[in-house]
Amino acid sequence: MNQGPGTHPRWATIGLVSVTAVWGSTFFMMKDILQRMSTADLLAVRFVIAAIVMVVMFRRSMARLSARSWQQAFVLGLVYGVAQLLQTWGLSRIAPSVSGFVTGTYVIFTPLLATVLFRQRLPAATWLAAILSMGGIGVLALHGWSVDLGLWLTLASAALYALHIVGLGHWSRSGDAMGMASVQILAVAVVCVLATLPSGPRRPPDPQTWIAVLYIALAAGAGAMLAQTWAQTQMSSTRAAVVMTLEPVFGAFFAVVFGSEHASWRMFVGGGMVMAAMYLIELAPQRPGPDPELEHHQL
Image 1 (tube, rainbow, N blue to C red):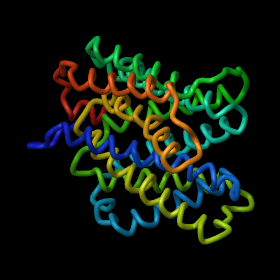
Image 2 (image 1 turned 30 degrees about the vertical axis):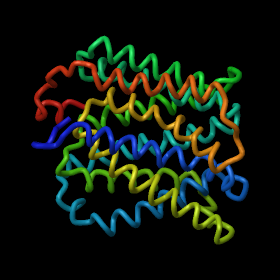
Image 3 (image 1 turned 135 degrees about the horizontal axis):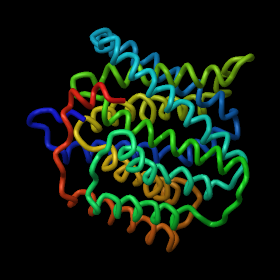
């Protein structure tokens, strides 16, 4: 993690909250789109569009990256792409509520991986916030439990999301954010297109679906990856993971306002727990991190 001079960490938190809001706004859209497209086709079209836009806009930033930064960003993108596929395949086998809870366990995997891979010393408040966030996600999403292949696939995706968060927190630098985000999206697109072989990705069937896919591709794909990559140059990976647990809170909000769901005690209690975890992590004492140059070469 390399914090830029004069940059207030609160702006990074605001940026990540915005990312989770965008992700949350796509839930009810995705449900409708998946009735018209397969999951592999949707992911492929979404990330190919995002990759084209980002490569065109930030090709100079990509060209300025060192060979090592290119490799690091591409590896992070591959990890993220596989996580997307595993999560989607798992969702086809288990209830969405169980999938949401299991995916949310990345908030626990993140400090574990940060500790194991980089020997980070984390304040007790950080661990408490991670556990509180997971509990909040469970209240929001968990209505049942089934142990089968789908659960293990989703659990594997959560571990990969955590690995992506940890790796991004150590490899990303504020000056390289645009270039690294573009390379990551390019790698995700490669993974998702490969998942559609041998037929290749099929296009959205109608204009309404195209509009929704474009929003998901540009806002929740390209824009979100860019914002996340920059924000994680300003905060620890564990702090970022806790902030991003707001995603199911925003998902519930948009489902009630724009979808067909109704507000429930789960939304208020679970959302309150996630908000409390965010407040706790913002108040947690910050320990000085290891030397950025050492971080850059460790993973």
